[in-house]
Length: 356
Image (cartoon, rainbow, N blue to C red; front, side):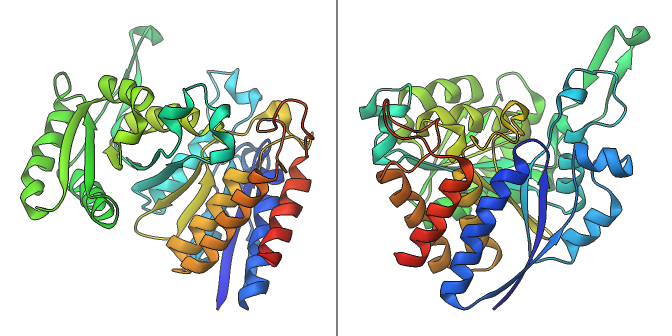
């Protein structure tokens, strides 16, 4: 099978972790006899520097001509510390999602037995926790009308949702719950927000179409508490853009490291596969960043973009084996145990893919 991948490393540690994911992809393709090609493109601060645009037309064209996008991260302190910047790296990520029609972000949360002690939660709470967060990605406050009034002293961000946006993401939620443990949790703030009341209304209307799915509803503040109190309660969570962004970052404490969380953004056109962590500029170029989230995102790419489940499963198995033998970066290493660099971990996972 011929696989065409758009390679968008982005900023900060993005190039380093994407390079390790490519090692895993190449190893899997060699083992299964696939032919892979990469097309490099820029997004984020590096694209602003060259094109004055965080997601230039040339990058969009590259994405559209590819079967999948392997993405690193965007963000740069130059823009973080300048609230007056006209163009920001994060605008590139939002533009990519909007222009590619990527309305659903899938973030699996799973724990590794060897790392339960890395979570700040008690081992008995996190051991065996495994659920899927589905975040609506192209609506809500991130894309609603925004601006300043009163000479800049008043600011507003409009949280707007249309019925079709809610229906399509809820449909995904019901469908994925049907493939798993048949339990869907709809997270909103319907006691306060009109947009959330529309979410709950539509979810209630859709419930009878999926009689085998158990559906419960949680206000987002309660959901934030229950993620910590009893993470094993959840199977599939579906929620709007802002809530999903916050809750999935919170869920990283269940696994013990944000460096373990992969994601897939899917929708109308080419899917984007990326770690949920940011650009971590303080670690850029130091060979200390954890590449496993990006490697696991590559596993999702094989599964969701190419329909190659065995290949994705092999990458996951290799990552788990690397973790079990303690071949990990500093954020996951046990006290007194050896610490390996970003590149060395990528090499080890690729080696395990070839051997397992």
